[in-house]
Image (cartoon, rainbow over all chains, first blue to last red):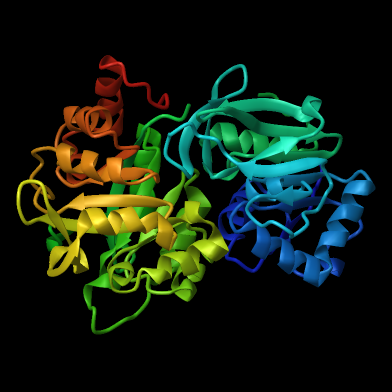
Length: 198
Length: 256
């Protein structure tokens, strides 16, 4: 296994806890990012999955970390977003009108239309053609302009993107770090830059 | 389509798992990481930790000690919540930062429901569980209690639950004290009343004794999840036993 350092973005909202420990358990060196200079010249950038879109974007816009992430994506480095982290890769969100997202992926984030089912959407559901069980905890979903970037979907009142991939940029709407062995395998593959099979 | 969740509750004191009926006669049942992993292997969809020490002394706030949360986060790869003694965003932050996925807030939210929003605004509503201990005053009506049922209020449970999402809760853990510890089954009718009053998911708690109880509260009670403790801790049933009965009754669950 080649060595990959994962730079994990800190939104200052206690968001690091669960993803950080999973990455360490998988054996990847890890670096926490609070300043733009923490996003070093190579390695993977990971946006973890707990928080509020507006608060998290304002934190990383203000610190300059947002620009460093955009630059990392432009230069073809692996960028991984989990749940909120996936949503932040897009341009705007209904969760925080007027606050710009990273805009690395074209499209928007909107409230999940659950068709009367309870929201937030919490729990394990089947993802992709093989119905891999993965854990979700969210109220919003991404709406990519380029539908070909949607690699797998899940369903909660409507069908929504669960796995989005565009070149070196990849995002999970579910939480791979809390989805047992199938989730850990996906996270490992994403960190290693390998193909994601769902 | 997500599957109804089977949740195992572990009471924690001094960084160890303990069990008891209505918080009395505590008995040490083992290391909490070992137990959590055992239940995850059995097919538990989520683990709920309740730090009963942190919440026991209302007059002596001491915050939840965190080294065990960190240990769980490092080894357990199914979602887990931590509750007990959470009174503020600072308390919640420390738990999330230690690796908890979700935070449950009980007595503090009854006294000051705004705390739910203070956590939700920063961590997202999906991370905030309102832990609601209710007691029947008549067949159809319940009041909200504090401190795990040791202190009654005059607040109607249905009204309080209805307002929970507005305050910022992303889920309600409904524990009906009258059923708690009986193992005679969940209060299916009252669970259904709460489910019908809210748009956020509801976890049924209190009274689980047999796998059939889970089937009833998920189908007739419309609970999004159901929680058991003693029936698992004393080895009467495994989570797998529960899921097998659910599947026999046509309720699709996450494969173990």
